[in-house]
Image 1 (spheres, rainbow, N blue to C red):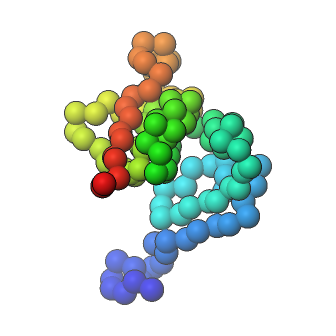
Image 2: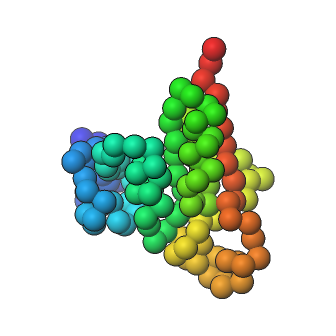
Length: 130
């Protein structure tokens, strides 16, 4: 448990992993901005892509794999503003940033943003060391 005056009122969340999450559960349907991971099991890559794209938001996504080409193929099918491959939250100041669906609307507050920009804002690939 963190200690100190900033934590006395309880405004913090410990890193938490939720298992056995279903795609219809609130924790899977709403974005959580904190150290939280919801694990949704799937049987196939196609099912994983369908689950990942079944969201109102689409701000960001991450793909982890030892097969870089497969990871890039999956990343190309994800409907998210930013997709990280084998990394998470690597952001450069020059990268375009934004989401899709409601995430883009909230970030940019302009309907024209949906029609005037490319589908993906940025993708980042971190190759494993050989």
